[in-house]
Image: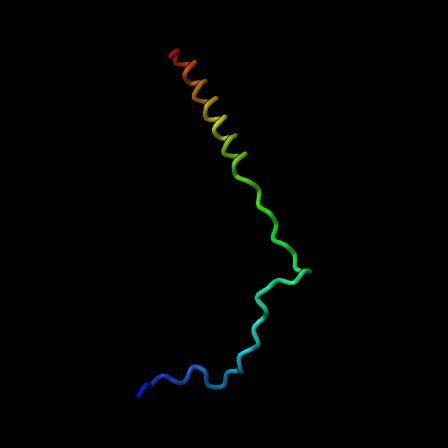
Length: 59
């Protein structure tokens, strides 16, 4: 025999589930900005930085 009290004792009945489809008036999620322009900018900056170090060292 379990010594735990009944966890569901005195709880309200289960609520009705909402429908799984979205209604037409629901707002669409905002589109996130693409990461690719930032990656391209980072690569250009890294290339420029390495080019500057190369020219400073005289390689």
